[in-house]
Image 1 (cartoon, one colour):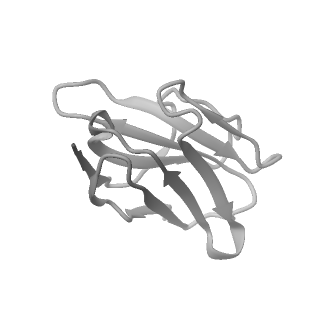
Image 2: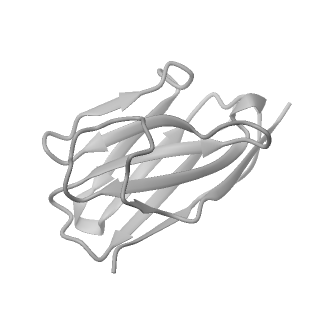
Amino acid sequence: EVQLVESGGGTVQAGGSLRLSCAASGFAFDRYAIGWFRQAPGKEREGIGCITSSDGSTYYADSVKGRFAISSDDAKNTVYLQMNSLKPEDTAVYSCAADTWWTMCRLTAQYDYWGQGTQVTVYS
């Protein structure tokens, strides 16, 4: 059974940093695309970044480009989302999602497996 568990959320002052983790299990961690999404109250879910196992490349939404970075530790079956220079508008529930067959990195919500999400709150 594929499982994704996010951790690392919390409350931080604007300008601060957080690192979220997405721990994966139930599939071979050599073939995947993993995306990070967020959803703020009253807003639609937004794809903010992704990583593919095919070549390790990443892709980011304009809203977070230059501030957020995605990396993976294959030995730990974990993908990270490093968030720097956080803004109040980054406040949302952050979730990771995985596709173990179609490994193209994309920001649309066409993933097979989803984590439960972790809350990030940024105050000014």
